[in-house]
Each structure stands twice: as structure tokens, then as C-alpha cells.
Length: 322
Image 1 (cartoon, rainbow, N blue to C red):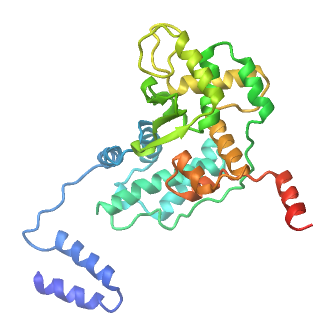
Image 2: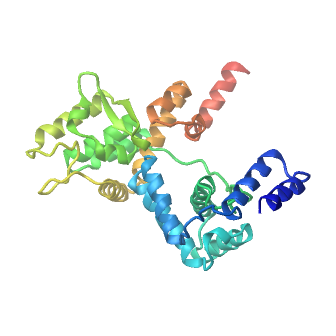
């Protein structure tokens, strides 16, 4: 067996590079050399479970893990063969069928592609498969529309439309800090420093950072906290007993209903984040500082918020060119 092993390596040396030869040697050792224990067979569901456990250890949120679980489960429900035998062509067909059946746009199908690609990349890194079938399936390009932000008039209408102190405080904190909705609901009263007008939030991967709020948010937060009679440590709680910590869905539903009641277009938590980032960049804040406030690990992510107002472009042209 050892002689055959050497002959195979020598024959393949003419057509494979060093890295490929090394990988071939590992595979041959694993499957052909006598006395080498074979790897236990794992079914598709077990692969998914191990992948999700790895993502949890990496610090992914429960929401992200659930998104991975749902996306990959849909794939596994359509795949009849072992996941190790899935080919690139299989995945292309799956994505095409997925888009037709669900009638979804390019952005949605690219999110599905990205999640599945993460799954197969993990299988490759863990040596469960030789090569990910998603490698040659590239990002699906879609037309990027300029997303709208909340105007000064709309934010005033939102404040005036609130029927409780909590919602006013919640809106002002989102508007001035640009924090994620998940970070908002995790805040405790003890995280707020009113003297410095700042608070500590825990972002993606439990990364800690400081964010800052304005005087208006400070006043509305203090008014809200002074009106509460409960002992819940959470900064934002439900309006009714037993005054539980407010959940992400609760914030989203509340803002959506408020926006609809005022005939405002698509009011949701992330729109406040986009608005804060756009305002900061528009007023001259260095992009690196905006990146730090938003908690982005990559500046390219921050640049997506850099929507330049056309009126400012016109004014800048007159100032520097005309």
C-alpha cells in the first residue's frame, strides 16, 4: 500500500501544485493507508448542528443563528444525497428554483447564497468536504437604490405622535446614537451615564463600545425613568404588567404602527441608524469616527451609509469649482 501511495504522489506531481499535492497526501493517508481509523459518518442534519454550534461559539447572535438554521434547513429539505456530494451545478439549480418558487428579489436570493456559502465554507475548513461547491457562485449583483432617511420634519411628527414617555425616549435614543435595535433592547438603566450623555452597548459578537446621545434624548430618558414604578433593570420595558424587558419585535411593531398612523413611509429601527450615520457624514464627521460609533469592523460597511445629499454636491461645486 505504501509503494502505491508514493507512486500516486509522484504521478500527480506533474499536474498539481505544492498545496494540492499536500492535500492529496492528506486524503490518501486518511482513506488508504492501513491502520488509519476512518472518520465517522455524519448525516446532513448533524453537519448543520455542528455548524450552528461553531457559529454560537464565534459569538453570533441568536437571531443570526436562527437565520442560518432556517436557510440551511430549506436547502437540506431539497437535497437527497449526502451534503459532501453536492456540486456547484446542484447549488445553481437550487438558487434558481428558490427564486422562482418564493418570487424573491436579487437581494434576498443573495442573502440566501451568502448563508449557504458560509455553511459550505465551514465544512471545507473543518475538512468535511474537499472544496465548497459555492466557490464559483459569486455575489448576485442588484440595483442599489438610494435608501431614504428620516427628515427633520418627520422626526418632529414622530415625537408629537407618541402617546407615552417611553416611545419618545426610545425614538430620541435611536435617532441620536444610531444603535441597533438589538443593542437598544439589551440596555440596562445602569448602562446610562447621564452626566456624560453616553451609554455602553454590546454589539455584534458582544463587542463593547460607547455611544453618545444629545440633550433632548437625555431629558426624555430621565422623564421616562422617573415615571416608572417597576424594578426591572432594563432601560425599556413593556407598558403593561409585569413590565418585562422590551423585545426587538416589540420595538419594530411599535415604530411601524406609529409611522403608519402618521402616514410616514417605512418607519423602522434601522432607518434611525441610517439617518444618524447619513447626518453625521453629511455634516462633516470623519468616516472613521462614524465607523467607531456604529460599531462596524469594516469601513466599507460604514460607506454604505454615506448617502450624499445632491443639494450639498451642488453647493460644494459652486464653492470649489464655479
